[in-house]
Image (cartoon, rainbow, N blue to C red):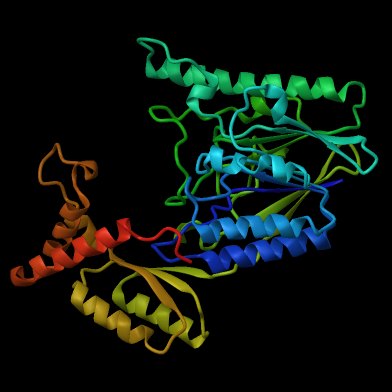
Length: 408
């Protein structure tokens, strides 16, 4: 039995307001082909199917089309859990219909713990694996707030609550397993384990306000033959264990991940001890981050043009080139290319714009308009032009906030 572990699709996510539906569609189409070619029996999706709790029509279409397509493959079972980005209600709404297709969904902690333990039966009706599908556990799911509780106590109680939940779930699975030790017990979870690795700007959120509450991976993994985790976007082992893993996200979530190789993980349970194999996911849209002075950035863009690149670019200038000169120069460089610049920033001017005016000031105390105004000053924009630019900026922000989330 071959089990495929993936997570953190984040369907509907944008990159600097650039829609990425073509990438998501290409990935899901590739995934169906991979499942077919590798004769995958079980697909596990460890949370964050969508990027928001109110996914667009297009994101929903991609999701349900994929589920329809997978029923046409030899994959016998699909198990999906909710992540912190997902709406439990939205994911759970069609669960009864999907269950008839051997697609099991657990969007949130269930009232009856046994409902998070899913026996997977073969065509003869015999159990071939047991999946403990633990979704993202919210604070209220695992502990009761106490009056006068200190932050350290809250963190400790939260960790204990999550560990206890996994311990109870494993025991239910063991009871189902009985003396048939050849039946593997597979765990799923969406959480942040201790000493795990993230990358800057990857969009990974701290899960619990006021506490890091990172969970010891070895503690929650006890009793599982494999533990499929989601939430972190970099594929990695937990505690250097082959059987406790994050699959990571299938797409780069930010330009800091531009050079990362995205992966899927397959656990082959031909024997009770699984054989673990990592597979690389193709890059469906190249991202390139260019940092340096204007001359070095220009040289790199010219190299990419010669290569006929179709990359999306993030450009960071490290010398104090005025914005007007920078923009016109970059526009001229990009003329005739197939590339697209999603963001240009000038590190020196940004640092200057965000310089404190007093000791009590922090970025959190500044509004977005305050920051934009300081950028105008840092770029030495003439006074007579600032008001019209501020008005244009306000209109852009208003348009962004009112954008139709159902747009394709």
